[in-house]
Amino acid sequence: MNNYCCQKLDDFLDGDLAPDEQKRFDEAVAQCDSCQTAIAQQANLDAALKSAWREVAPPAGLNVTADEINLPAKPQPEHAQRALHVAQAAIATILAASLFIAISTMSRNSGDSGAGGAATSARLDAAPSVARHTDPLDAHPAVITFDQRSIGVVDESSDDSFTLVRVYSNINVADAANN
Amino acid sequence: MLRIEPYIPGLYRFALALCRNATVAEDLTQETLVRALAAANPPKQDRAVKSWLFTVLANYWRDEGRSARNRLRQTASDGAWTAESVIDSGDGPDQRLIQNETRIAILSRMQNLPERQRQVLYLRAVEEFSIDEIATTLSLNRDAVKSSLSVARKTMRSWASQQDADGRTLGPICKDELKTE
Image (cartoon, each protein chain N blue to C red):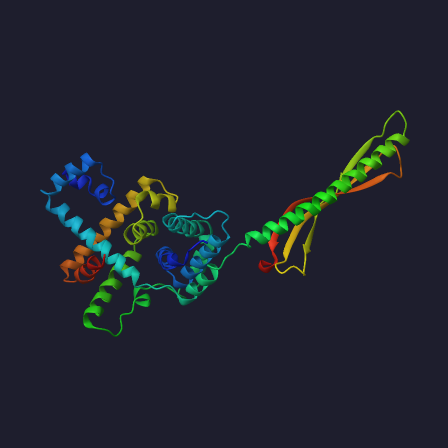
């Protein structure tokens, strides 16, 4: 094991020799019977291992699963795109209307309370509720899910002034066929 | 579309090399396929997909393998791996029988190596992964891979020398293999 080739045998088998190392290795191995034997034996073993493992076939069930898995897993982009536009438009309208109502109410209350102005506070629901929307008449219906939170805007200068604003987040559009 | 079907046989064999139990290997492969399907950003290129799938399987075995190992202990005889159970040594031409006996012998010897050595030897010799690919797949550093591979190779060569001395050469299947490559 004192030869250069014996020390570098694993690097050679791993393809880890630099060009100058490879040249030196080739010269050394030409004079080394044990390395020549080891290299031939390792090539034989690797080929035998590959051949033997190829005889090991997976169970049939795994192949069936592969067929199922190779089906398209994602919704058709055009359906998702169209449904997303519908959802975005609807939600933007709802948000704008809610905001308008809230601002109108607060302005009115502020005017009622005089020069001191209104103190307001907002309360958030503890946890969002999740809503789903589907259009059964659509040939490729989409399922739209979103978190829905209610914010109560309270005018603290008045006992009876309370405005409810709904906020929608985590909007998700999926092809109904995949649900 | 993610094409994983061509890699299923290799994944199953790798799982078998890891756990040495046909039932658990099937579960490992199945779980790997499910995880691959659920992945948000799978790789696009074929070679990258292959390496990635083996990484998913190796990670699952490393992270979740404890329950699988417990199951192995509880059901030691259920699906226990033997080379004879996966390679047909029955009817066939004489030459084929000799080849299969050799295959059974070499698989049995490999499956008696320690787990780390089985992993690196399988990925290098059978799947032809580079040292860097093996290191990434098994979350090891390069030196650890090379060290385990070196010991595994020496053990296998020592075994092959003994086989030769006993007159059971590995010749026939190796020659066939080299012709088809």
